[in-house]
Amino acid sequence: MAAQHELRDKGLRLTPQRELVLAAVRELDHATPEQIAEKVRETHPGINLSTVYRNLDTLENVGLVQHSHMGHGSATYQAADVVNHLHLVCGTCEIVGEAPINAAANFVDSLLDDYGFKSDITHFAVYGTCADCAKAEL
Amino acid sequence: MAAQHELRDKGLRLTPQRELVLAAVRELDHATPEQIAEKVRETHPGINLSTVYRNLDTLENVGLVQHSHMGHGSATYQAADVVNHLHLVCGTCEIVGEAPINAAANFVDSLLDDYGFKSDITHFAVYGTCADCAKAEL
DNA sequence: TTATATAAGTAGAAACTTTATTCTTTGCAT
DNA sequence: ATGCAAAGAATAAAGTTTCTACTTATATAA
Image (cartoon, rainbow over all chains, first blue to last red; front, side, top):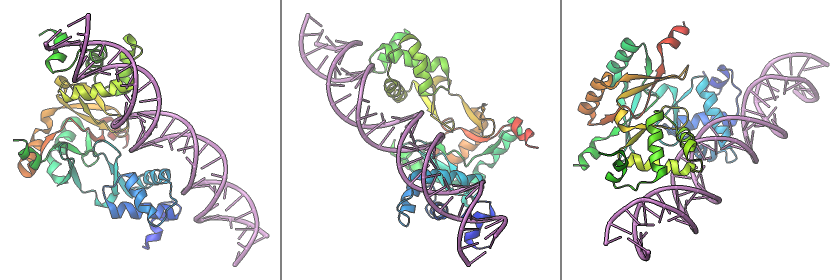
């Protein structure tokens, strides 16, 4: 499958803006719409921020990208096929850590068993204090 | 302890606006800044939205209120002493459910043991699909 | 292959939310 | 009562998302 066909396979038109947005998401990982726009402007200076928002939305609808909430400010976007970890946001140093998704497996299972709730634990970050900051507070 | 002293005990001045914001947070629960401003305006019409934001911030700093991210839209605020559950946000029907905090106890413990990360699981909602919507999809 | 129709996409602006700044007012210690 | 520092109001600025009118990619047909 040629790269330039994956968009059309999803029923989407092939525009330079759209290709560049998708490429930027894949390259940057955990990027905000603003950061993605900045990246795209390196090769396509005229692109409008609203185009980035709209395309992120579109690409998310067809399942190529996903967003997660890392706290204040915008959501961040990543390619759908690399979303295999959960995010740990430190409220003190604001660093975003990662943990394998199966660290939450039991939690997810119990929410399903006890409440019938099918959780997507990658969508929201887990907020708290990282090891370094916890140590520094003592 | 008299109610009108709890703010001063925290080193804060006692202003009508501040009292009303705190009262509104306690009464409304899970309210956005905008909703809180609306509530305060019932008895204090002139209050500025920025005053609400600033006071929510101040009250949070002294530990009287807390905010959580429920996804779409603004953060929501609640009195710190009633934050004893986690939020389950359904991405389909957008209803916000609750689960006791100890449903996440093992998960929180394992993040602490394995990564040294002290999580506050109430700060971000858990995203997913509620039982009703999951059933409806079949 | 080229022209044309139209549905999808883009740019720009507007709407909305949150934060910062400046100046005025007010709570409260002395 | 008076002065000082904290808080409020107003406004602007920054940041995020949505809306609208114009443009373009693509399918179809000559």
